[in-house]
Image 1 (cartoon, rainbow, N blue to C red):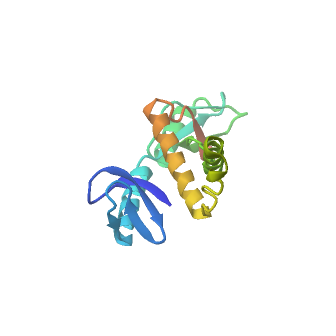
Image 2 (cartoon, rainbow, N blue to C red):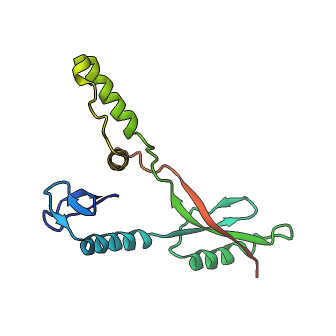
Length: 177
């Protein structure tokens, strides 16, 4: 498992790799204990959880409103107030759902990258490069995939290509009062 967190030792935003039970800062080499790591993850989860967004759907247009609400209840209340006059005999319900940004999908690229590196070394150095990177473990491939995903995500956000759209999940229908 790889996370990007602030290292308690060097205070830099770094990749923290959890392999073989060790938590190691990729910048300064500081070893975190499980308690430090768990507390950092809990703090990160709280930050993500506090950014919850909800919307309601206008049943006549089948479009979700542009306004976002911090709770399902707030979206429901706003939907009831706004939609009451818009609901007809044909449309007696409206929906409330959670707004989620679509995550950047980077896929599994580690094995392809390792193969490309092996081929490049073989092309440059022929037989002497045979066997290079042949003993990479599944855990090391997973670690590289996690790093590649984080790099792609950081690049996309830095260049303004982060999530261009959202999806609505946890949709529940509500009857008009």
